[in-house]
Image 1 (spheres, helix red, strand yellow):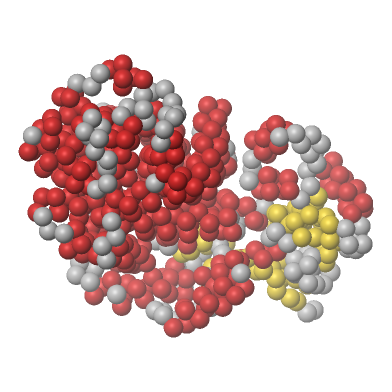
Image 2: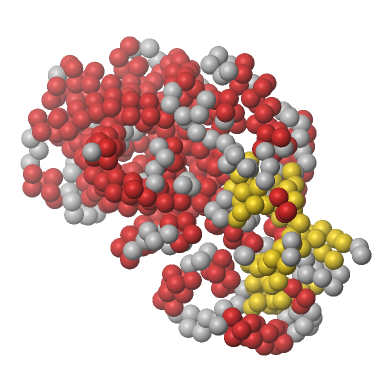
Length: 119
Length: 113
Length: 404
C-alpha cells in the first residue's frame, strides 16, 4: 500500500458512509529495531495547518479555541478501526459520536436551527 | 521499549542525506505492508521520479520527460525502513552510503520483477 | 427514453445558463470595439470548455468524487491549497460582479441605483439556496435563462454580412489598439473558461447521482449544450458589432450596452436586455455561491449537498450564507460592476493553469476513471489548454494595465 497516495488526503467515511473529514495526517509509532507501525489517522484543521507551516497551526488553534465548538485537538482514529481503503477510507465508527463533527454539530445547533427554514 | 511518534505527512518532501552528506533526494512516498494485525512501513521512495510514481502518471510523465530531453531516467531510490534514521524528522538520514543504496534499490527492483 | 430526456434537459439548461456577466460584458466589448474580429476567441474558448466540462463530468460519473475532492486526494493538500485559495478569492469577486449584474438590470428598469438593490438581491439568492434543491436551481433558473436567446433572435433580425462574420473565425491581430484587442481576447477566454464551471459541473454530476451509464449524456450535454450555448455569446458579440460599433459606442457602462437590443426590438429591446442580464447573472450568482461552498466542503471533507436540508450540511450552508452577503457588500459600497467584471475575468485568466493542470493527472489515473482514461485526443486538448492558459496567465495583468 502506498500510504501517501492511497491514504493521506483521502475522504474518511464512517460505517454509514457519512463523510467525516479527510485524512489530514498519519501518525506512526517508532520503536527501536522494529519497522515503524502505522498507528493513527488524524483529522483536524490544526493538523492540516501544520502541513502548510507550523506557525499556521498555532494561529488556527488560537482561532479555533475562541470560536464555535472551541475544539482544537485533532481527532485520532486508531488504525485498527480502518475497515477498507479504496477511493475512500472507511472506518468502523459513527461520525456523530466522534469529535470530527464538533463544528458541524455546533453550527447546526447554535446557528442553522435558529434561521427560519433551518430546522 | 520506548516508543516515539512521528507524523508521516510532515516527512513528505523532506530531503534525505546520506552518512557522508550527499543528497539522496526528497521523500515522496511511503510503502506499507500488513504484518499480522498491524500495518508497518517497509520502504520509503525518494527522488523526482517518485512524484511521477505517486501520481500514477508514469506513462504520461515518462513520455513528457523524454520529449523534454531527459534520456536516462532512473527510477529514484527505494530506501528500506531500517536504512533511514528518523531521530531528527526534519533531517532524515540515510544510514548506509548512497552507493550501497543504489545496489539495494536495484536488488529490490530485480526482486519485484 | 429517460436518458434522452436527461440529454435534452442538460442541453437546454446549458444554453439557458451559458451567459453570465463576464460573457455578456466581454462579448459586448469585443463587438463594439472590434466588430467581428474576435469571434475566433469565443470559438476557441468554447472548444476548450467543451473538452474540460466533459472531463469533469466523466471524472465524477466514474469515481463518484468531485473535481475538488480528487485534486486534494491525488495531488495532496500542499498543492491544492493554491488553487483553493485562488478560487475562493476569484469566486468572491465574480460573485460580486454577478450580483452587480442583477442590480444593474434592476436599475435599468426602475431607475433606482444598483447599490440599493445589492442586499435584497443577495437575500433572494440566499433564500433560493437555503430553501431550494439542486434540481430547482439547475433547471428552473436555466429555463428562465432561455430569455437570453433574444440575442440570437436579434442576430437574425439584424442580418449581418456573412462573409464578415466568417472572417472573424480566423485569428487576426489588428495593427492599431493591439493591446486593447489582446486584453479583450484574454478576458473573453477568462470569461468562458471559468474554473467555477468545472468544479460546479462535477459537483452537479454527483448531486444528480450520475454513474457510468451517464457517460453518453455527459458527452452530449458538454458538446451540444456548451456548443449551442456559445451561440448566445456569439449573438451578443454580433449584435454589439452591428449596433454599437457603427455608432462608435465604446462600452463604458451597462447603460450603453443596453442599447444593443433597441435597434432590432425597439423599446422592448431595452427591457429584454435588462431581463436577460438579470436572469443570466442571477443564475450565475447561484452557481458561484454554491461553487465556493462546494470546493471548501470538498477540500476539508465536510458533508455537502444543495439537495440536503441545511441542517444536514451545516458548515456547507453556513459558507454560502456568509459568502453571498459579504460579496454583495462590494456592490453596496458602490464598486463599478463593469470594472469589477473585467478585472475578475482577467484575474480568472491568471489562476486558470492551476485549475487545469490537475486534469492531466486525474484523467489518466485508473483508480479514478477506470477504463475511461483520456485518449490521446483529450490529452492533447488538455495539454494545449494548459499551454494556452499559461500564456494567458502571464499576459493578463500586463494587458490589463496597457489595454484595459
